[in-house]
Structures are given as structure tokens and as C-alpha cells.
Image (cartoon, rainbow, N blue to C red; front, side):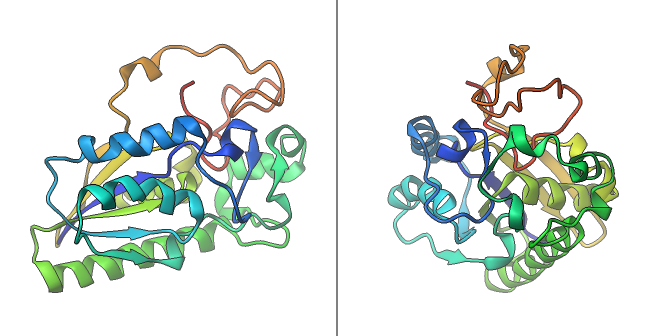
Length: 240
């Protein structure tokens, strides 16, 4: 079976505003995110990609533009099933506000029971994303063979959900995983089991340094509360 390269979109304007974008239209990369995207072709220079598959949302399409420009002829496909989680009524709201919602503790500790008002459940999000990966694995294998490599550009929670499936982890544990903006995660699928080759690789070890506590709601990725043990819903803004 093929090897899948999962790329989270570059840092977006919603990430820096500490807003849960969801599927809100018009959310673009910020300046730092554009630089992350521009560096992606060099980071993947030695990887023989046969296809790129993108979430339909603008921030993913913008992330792939430099890669497609560097590799003319690389096929690009749009896949609705790897679009961001439908956060429903939570979409477009500040993370600081959402931290006070009773549902947030369920999202953090029991995500398999979490369903967003006016949106979808996290269970449904994982199921559609994993189905998309399995379908594309078969499609890429048929067209290019077992040893082929392809790329999907998607979103933080989607990538974490796909990795959890590959590791045989229950969805309730997926908040223990993390994928920064423009990070690369790689999974090699085989007949009997997947192998996780990379997780959230940005090539920047400085991102491992301790961060200052979020002082207020305007801190990128922060909520203005003591949330050191919480996962960043939507994926967070990554290192400054």
C-alpha cells in the first residue's frame, strides 16, 4: 500500500487571532503561514510524490500553491472528506469563549461523545477522514503501485484522527497527539498494519522549547485560562 504524507495547512489568520475557524470561508494564511508554505517544496524535495489531495478550504489550497508551482504536472485533487471538522455554532468564535462551554471538557476528555451544536460529531469527523484515506490508498495503489507516495493537505483535528486510527488508538486518546501548522506527518500503509513514520515534523526543534503561558485571549492559540493540559481544538497556531 502507498505511503501517505499528511500536511497541516500553514498558520492562518484565524490561528493568530485565536479563533476556531472551522469551515468559515475566507480564512487565509497569514504572513508566517505563507513563508511556511514557501518552504514546503524544499522540505519535500526528495519525496517522489505522485499526487496531491487537498481539503477544499482556502488555507489548504494556499499551502499547496508553492509545491504545485515547483512541481508542474503534479496532479491535484480536492477531497471534501478531509475538510475541517464542522464545528457548527462554535465556528468563528474565540477560543477563550469556548473554554467556558461545558462541551469543551467533553471535547478534551471524551471526544468520542462530543458533537458540536449545529455541526458534526468528532466520531463522524474521524470516520469520514479515515474512509477518504482508505479510498485514496486504493486509488493511488491502482494507478501507481504499492511503493508510491502521495500527499494530503488537511487540518489539525483531521490529521490527529487519521493518526489515531493508524495507531489503533481510541478516539478518546487522540487529544494526546499534536500537529503544528505546516507540519509533516507520514504513514506507510501495508497489508497488515500501518506504520507511523513521522508525526508533526516541522524541522524546527526550537518549537520544543517551553512557551510563555498565554496571557489573554489574543495570544495565538491561547484561551486566557490555565489550559496546560488541554489540546488545542482545531490544532493551534504552533510556535511563534
